[in-house]
Image (cartoon, rainbow, N blue to C red; front, top):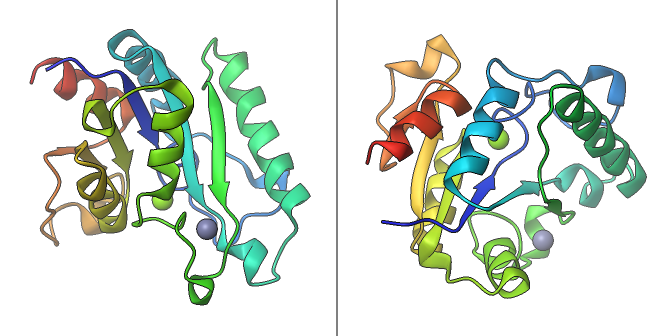
Length: 176
Ligand SMILES: [Mg+2]
Ligand SMILES: [Zn+2]
């Protein structure tokens, strides 16, 4: 199977999960994030981040706060010779019932339209079961990152692939 795009979650997948992260100083890349993204870039020509940022809709932070966090993440990736093509996010609170909040497929459909590729040829990588559901709703391959030893063995995942970090994910996708 040839995949054309990778869709990455942001919090808990590329950077350390901080609830309602709004301060760029708190941005910290997870282990193997840069190496993993570089390896994924060799497997799929497009790598895009799709992130739920309900902190905006809930009034905990502004759109500019999220943009400054994204900017900082990009800076850290570029320092390590890696990058993503685009970062899109859903700013809505759950009760707004939008079409873009994961696990709804909206952001994935947007990426598919923008790059002219079928959603079935996407790989979705995230750290939550809702990312797996998001992948399912797109007909994409699902990969869950289990970087928290506490949850590593305790819960089952419906994901096609379970990986410890983004590099492990890339290796497992390559060997499918
Ligand atoms: Mg996450
Ligand atoms: Zn939304």
